[in-house]
Image 1 (cartoon, helix red, strand yellow):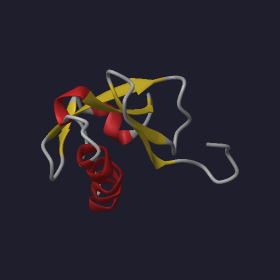
Image 2 (cartoon, helix red, strand yellow; image 1 turned 180 degrees about the vertical axis):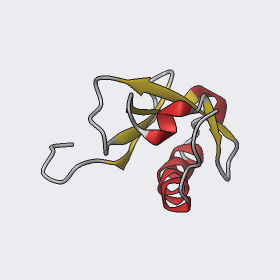
Image 3 (tube, rainbow, N blue to C red; image 1 turned 180 degrees about the horizontal axis):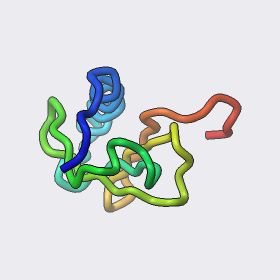
Image 4 (cartoon, one colour; image 1 turned 30 degrees about the horizontal axis):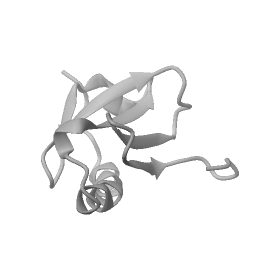
Length: 87
């Protein structure tokens, strides 16, 4: 199930994930939110250097954008976003 995720994408995810973990967030409570038509959306979870990360596809995120968020809303980080968009 699902196509392969590029090394570049996994590296970007790790770069955004590591500061969340260091700030006290737990990997099992974090998800990556991606566009419904993104390649990564074909996966239920992805393996990162920290552990398994849940994938949540949605029609509310434009293709080319992704963010990490902890369930308790304690942590948030952009993985990638389009230029010109306000954070």
